Image 1 (tube, rainbow, N blue to C red):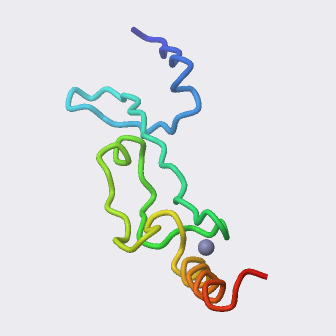
Image 2: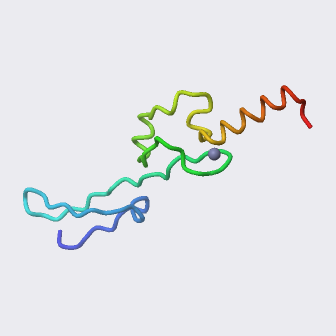
Amino acid sequence: MGSRAVPRPALRRAKWKLVRTPGGRLVVRVVDKKHDYPKCAICKRPLHGFPKMTAREERRGHRPPTRVYGGYLCSDCLRSALKAAVDAAYWGVK
Ligand SMILES: [Zn+2]
């Protein structure tokens, strides 16, 4: 068991962390990659209130803001969209 094993292809680009076992061996532990922040659908800026999460953490779920379009639009874009909708209702769509 002297040579290091070749990692399987799915783990070749993953981040590795060397961990010393209680028996004194050095063992590679694969660190899960974190996804980027979710982005606003209009302005593409990162949404507030979301941490960078691994795929496993995303599967467990994260509660988005409770307003309409929460977790989809940022608050600035939602505010301007609502104002535009109200203006269009009052003054007609030009
Ligand atoms: Zn936005």
